[in-house]
Length: 157
Image 1 (cartoon, helix red, strand yellow):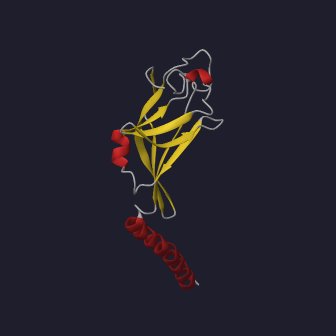
Image 2 (tube, helix red, strand yellow):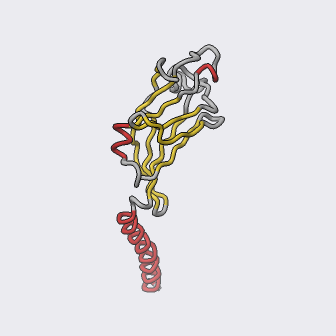
Image 3 (tube, helix red, strand yellow):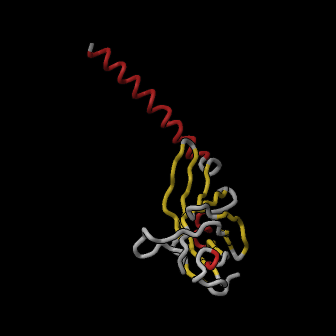
């Protein structure tokens, strides 16, 4: 009986380990081709677009146009949803992670007054990007980036 259990256990381990090793090998070889760069965050309706000090009472900024600008050029856009969430997906064949972190910015030109009439009606928000890690979904490797902290810029628009 013990021998039978050992054989079943060994087959189970081989059945799990072999596909994982194969997936890791393919992921290493095809990683750049089977990858994505994801920039996402939540935009808040505050003078700096960030969550307030108390966090829970901070309103979000829905329907704001979020631009990814690299070298002053708009390379991708997204619109925040009703929860202030935005997500931009990029092909790593066209963008290097190091270039996104060092040479690109997330820009919001939508006037803050559109979410709160007491906020400025000119200017916008700007943030650098920060790499926070990878997510592996099957063979797909997703590099995750977030805004490092929005700042108000009166010269935007």
